[in-house]
Image 1 (spheres, rainbow, N blue to C red):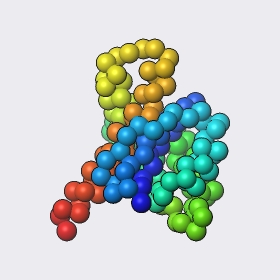
Image 2: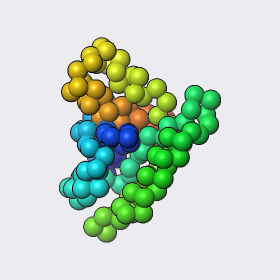
Image 3: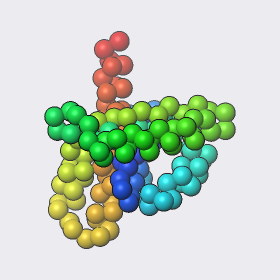
Image 4: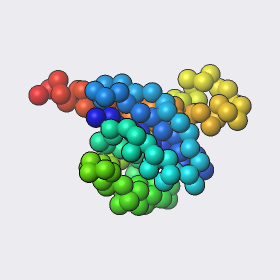
Length: 143
């Protein structure tokens, strides 16, 4: 089973997809927020995804902001709609995304083109998802 990462934004949603063993991931696609539900319908039907990891935009002090509340509400709405796909349960979780956008921009060496900015959302989603996957691997080693 695979994992899907989402970096939810006000206009764009970055996505990332893991391998079947949930060890690594790569940036997938940047989707217009208005097309997100259609995108999820398609990818959740086409790929064996068991978990969707949503970037949780905490403040640097670990608190919540208006943006945090907005993202949580959107995640909850999507989770209600996509709890199960083709008989397969989908787990939805929030994962700390602090500094993922900055790291994504750094990877692109500060490129400021419109295409690079759009792509940075899917790169940020990959950083979020890889952090989750690394945590899974770490806890598997501890057991």
